[in-house]
Image (cartoon, rainbow, N blue to C red; front, side):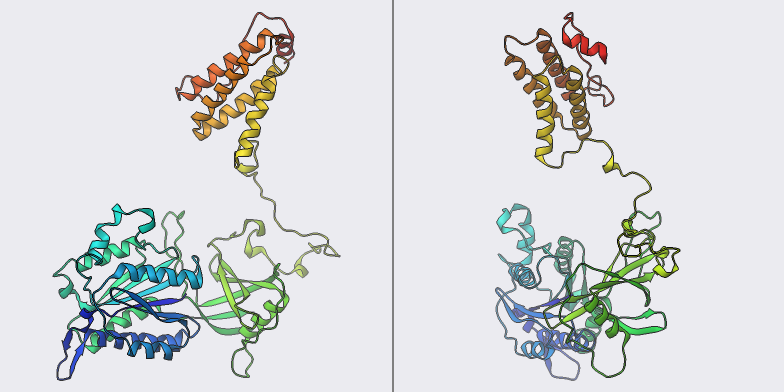
Length: 490
């Protein structure tokens, strides 16, 4: 999960802070001190994560593109210059552009905004931006919510008492709300000093950058692993009393399965050291064999491990989480019932691997497999309407087929609330009636007019005519032609 540090370098950040018995500091110095602490922590515990540094005032500038080199980040941080007023909106738009160019719109990202709580004045200030959100055109939308999954952490180099004298906290909370509530606002507790700023960034580290250490086990083999990013608790919506589910720190690999991915070159990204490591063995095996490994994360919660290549020479051992439950993949069945083929009475794949027990067939027939009318594409609806019109031109010989197709379309339209369709087909039937040739059977005109009238009544939504279980029946006429004979036979 990459991180973007958005550093405020406006003039308000140069306001002096008098520390007891020491030299005078600026708020910018305190912010740099806090970020130094964060970078040192990430260099030690999050070496594989990418971080970018963006400075902003009335304009924004990418100081350091995404990198794992924290020395470069620290050097750029120490050399930041001071600029003019605070304009947060263009900076947030810049962050959005930077992340999308580098990672696309699906990669989750963390944005750390460091500011003193002065939101600017007049046009371009955060107050002005928030007050005009509802009056903007589509091409000038506010950059939040970000077009990618993101958490916004706002680090205020100011204490709560100072911020409460203005509407700063309200505006910042609105900023979080625009981001879907993902993130948090941190303020300094007590007077502004190095110790309290360290405590401020310590809370951020505890919240977002605490390493997740776990033990990966497979039989008698085990390995200490660290997971990036830290897995979030999962709450299942359908549970009566939902409680967050968290991954156990002692996870079990259950078995392996093949994938359709092509084999790639052997990984050159090996762990340092000569001692045997199960994690390296597993990663290399999955990569070479093109397989995945099932892993148990907790009670009735599973995932899979697999190798993913960043490039031809670099690859990572990845873990994807399934939804909690005993059957996360319906075609696989209950994960707890999987086992080696040697335990089966007979080989489920056959002696020559000519068959497979998967996918499992569902015990109950799915609703989408029933004989119901579904229009996924316009062509499907067009086909059904054309079928009705073809039968309409062959009345009265096709009277029963005509009404059968008509009632099928009517029921589907009522189920979807597609009233306009009923009226449209009624208009088509009336048009067909006017186009009947002189040689047409007299019953055809009566049946078309009758069907069109019934569809129009149903399109009003009146319960008397729009009942779902009601069927339009052929109109009884005095003609004794083929239409009557056809009805007698039915």
